[in-house]
Image 1: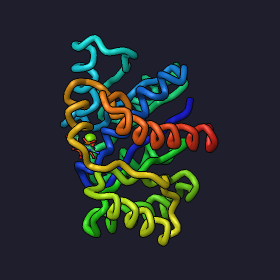
Image 2: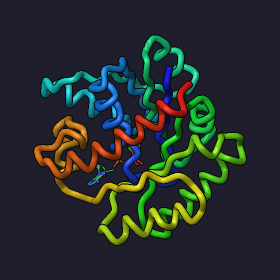
Image 3: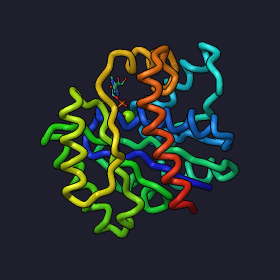
Image 4: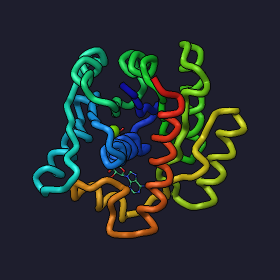
Length: 211
Ligand SMILES: Nc1ncnc2c1ncn2[C@@H]1O[C@H](COP(=O)(O)OP(=O)(O)OP(=O)(O)O)[C@@H](O)[C@H]1O
Ligand SMILES: [Mg+2]
């Protein structure tokens, strides 16, 4: 089973947004996929999947809420791909799931306030034994193109691997999520293209690092 976990130090940086899109695009690629929501308090991904079901949107995203990483792993055992959306403030459970992941995606914002803890999280994960090439940074919610590009430069200058593309902050994305769609399924072609490029890149890298 391929496991992709979405982790971040700070909240609200687009972790659940990327996880939901990764689940949808993985299903579209033909892989049986489970979306495990480890953020059992907020249940962002699970509630979104419920909105999606209620609106009758396809493909259906099979989702469960879990408090423990070992339980989500057991529950998803029969799937080809497990996408894990974690709690903010990467804690012990996030670390355990990161250890077992083919790819750990670290979502981050663009400001120094967001970037610094994200980069320190990368060091911490490496220190705890997660290989450098299994860590992938993704910049979500960039307020402008310049800030998105600058954030990628900073991440690269710390020698971490970063997707060479970023999400800009767009009302079109949040409206779409509210309606139960993923950010790759908006009514706008350019928004979809941008989101798909990023998510397909994440899936391709996860397959490469394989498990
Ligand atoms: N690129 C974007 N443009 C506009 N809105 C976005 C974008 N990405 C995410 N959002 C919105 O920002 C909010 C936070 O995003 P999300 O839930 O993905 O972050 P998170 O890191 O999982 O947060 P939390 O710490 O609460 O779990 C959501 O309301 C979502 O709809
Ligand atoms: Mg979340």
